[in-house]
Amino acid sequence: MTETLAITLVQCNQLVGDITANAEAMLAARDRAAKMESDLVVFPEMNLIGYPPEDLVQKPALIERAAEELDRLAKATEKDGPAMLVGSVFVRDGALHNGVALLDGGRITATRFKHELPNYGTFDEARLFSPGDLPDPVLFRGVMLGLPICEDIWHPAVCRHLAEQGAQIFVCVNGSPYEIEKDVLRIEGVAKRRAIDTGVPMAYLNRVGGQDELAFDGASFVINGDGTLAAQLPDWEEVEVTTRWIKGKNGWSCVPGALHRLADHPEDIYCAMVVGLRDYVDKNGFPGIVLGLSGGIDSAICAAIAADALGPDRVWCVMLPSRFTSQESLDDAAECAKMIGCRLSTIPIQPAVAGFDEMLADDFADMSVDITEENIQSRIRGVTLMALSNKFGPMLVTTGNKSEMSVGYATIYGDMSGGYNPLKDAYKTTVFRISEWRNHHKPKIGLGPSGPVIPQNIIDKPPSAELRPDQKDSDSLPPYDVLDGILLGLVEHEKSVDQLVGEGFDRHTVTRIERLLHVAEYKRRQAPPGVKLGARNFGRDRRYPITHRFRSG
Image 1 (cartoon, rainbow, N blue to C red):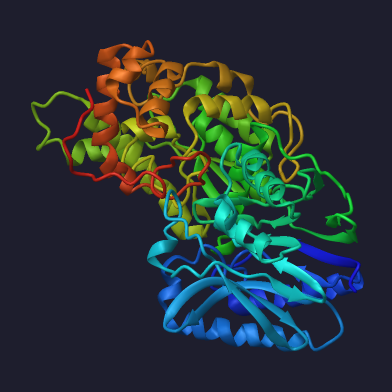
Image 2: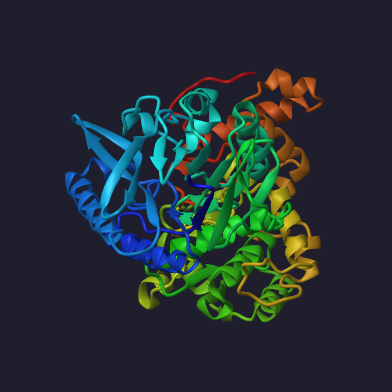
């Protein structure tokens, strides 16, 4: 009778669609787990094809290749070493499933399919997959394993069914994207409840890495049947941990292991930005990034994030001064680049501005100067930065924050130009908070310098686009603490104007911000992707029509 079990949890990154590379990485992990005398090595949800695959799973060629590689992995288990639990896609009776396969002794010994298909926020699995039946446990070397998949544990039915059918250990594979405070929710709000409810311990494995707008934080763990935390893997890092399990008079439990500290707030936000940008740049084959460094806080923190993601030597900052750019901004940008240790070029845009003035003189005759001329400056900067990107290869990073994107305080085809935006889901007040934090801390996954990376003057001075004389953001917008409070209500919590007025906000201000939020939707549809931080990011979570006339107040 089996009395002990060793389960290796492989908290890893993956490449969506690179099935052969993913398979090779899993075989290498199996070899390492064998040296730890592991019985079973476990990989995250759908790790063979990468997660989320989105509509790639509608390609028959991908399904066929995944099946071929799964067979190859199964044959590899003929050799001495652990069995493997591998997530992939499966076709049964014409239906496509998100599932896991247990590979042992040179063959696929069992498959189980995801029962609860998430269809909210970033997830749209119900349009891609068919739900599996309530899964029964799998007998593995004398132990009954329950194999819930990600969303299956967020509802009680699957775990209760598995426990009723005799499951002794839950092994739950996940592709759970980062959201603020989600690590606590996974443990306290979900896994601990299932373990205590059933009395069955749970190994919870999540992936790490960036995939387009999603960042996966890892933070895998083991919960024993009494609700105690037996192991906590680190967040934001690839790691392999072999957990040891013993059978006692009250059933199976995991021998207590290391309990790693997870990143506190706002380090977790900063790490999500770093991981999201790093993998977007590296997985898409860019040599580095280029960005416009204005002397303002948004571009400064983006430069710091890029340096922590890629290393300062892969970050190219460009100052693009106009006649409205202050000497203070020039000095601040130069000091910021020096503190980060990255390259800085200065390219004045006045010759191009003069050329546009001359080119448009006849058609603009007798018209007063307005926002049009301001936007031309921004678009000249966008064209210039894209020219550098085209000529030398680095990806252009855009630097607008969520507050600006919410109300359209950004120039389409200008400062919105770029391939990726680390701040897309970060409100301006969050930008200030992470900037202060980064000046006093270096993230554990950062490749940038220790110590301050942003001149304090950039953090302290009033924000300005510097597109006209003495311009300040406050000329066009409420103070950012007020604006962000209103936007949190309108965007994150879908509150009405009346509700926000009831909370103390000025009605005229709230009504104006709601109108700006709606009319800027067309800009946001054309904005580059950016890492998701909260529960309602623009794009994957919040999908509004561009054309509509609803107003709540």
